[in-house]
Length: 447
Ligand code: GLN
Image (cartoon, rainbow, N blue to C red; front, side):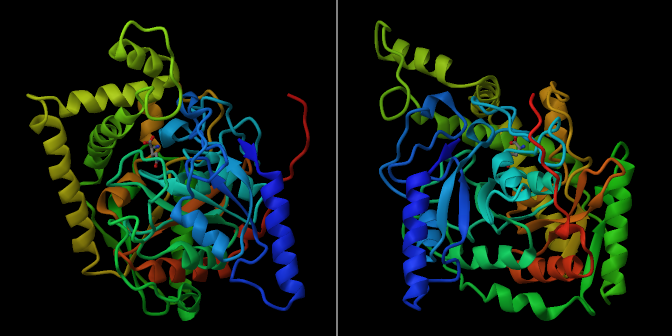
């Protein structure tokens, strides 16, 4: 979306000077990174994939960007995304569709598709995305990189353009689990600017990597292997489980019985919160204004009609309906009750096991334009949404390729704030395999 050339060169020169002086600033000194275009960056446009924010230049930095800078990271630019993080392919970006580096006819996943593609293509050493219902884990799986959604509350949301505030969480994309640990170390922790960023001590994530999985109890959820899923994905995930067993993990089947209701609950709660969050784009406070209306209401309605894309309008309508008097309890209230049941499923499973291993997605990267029906698109999130509803940490790590050469991801889930176990299992698996070392061959083909 935006290349921050001058910022990058200035920050890199400062990092060089610190190295010469023998005083590197922090664990990410000189590391080139990029941000999904919904993290506010002072003086740098933050458009969130939307025409309504096309000219929005934030007057302040998101906490996570402040922390990355303080650790020495160098900002290369801002990355494409589905408008307001609604989508699974970046096709909902109001600007352009990002391509998958493994196959340029295919999507990189979404909504953080720019963030996963940039790391997969080797354009940045790390990037940040956000995950509300899968938007870090799903694109990581589609692009063959590591993507971590931390526990809800682990990372500050201050300075993130909000989609669904009870679900949104920022996290890293990297090539390796160790690099994810390094970035998480920098961005995690309480923040006086965000009361939902929990005051929970931040452990040493790199130190957690070494533990191995010997004796660890790992659950395989029965409900995550469903009819209609890609058999190559199922095979790869079952093979990953075997690798972990070979490393000494004790695996057992677990049940998460309310999994099938997760999507329906998510697609009520997410839009309900979005309809409320997006009320702020009224043509007055910031962003686009379409003038010429007779009064304030007409100006606002013209602005929103012109500034929001189809999917965003669909969510606003869904959410407004679900929250309206008379329907509130039947839809929103019911969805919240289902959310509690989904969270209880995980709680019960984690009484028996320390981690859960499952597919990240039911299929691999699909073709641009292939999923025109929004419901088909929503089905992609079936294995990522429950973890979001329960607020748990989840990572996707490369777990092989289809015969066609498309990446497959395996998901590791643990208890709230137990990122150390998520990273430990993921790292043990990664070190026993070589999927993460493969690189896409990118050719400049005219299209
Ligand atoms: N694909 C899901 C959606 O469209 C999740 C998006 C996200 O996690 N931001 O809502």
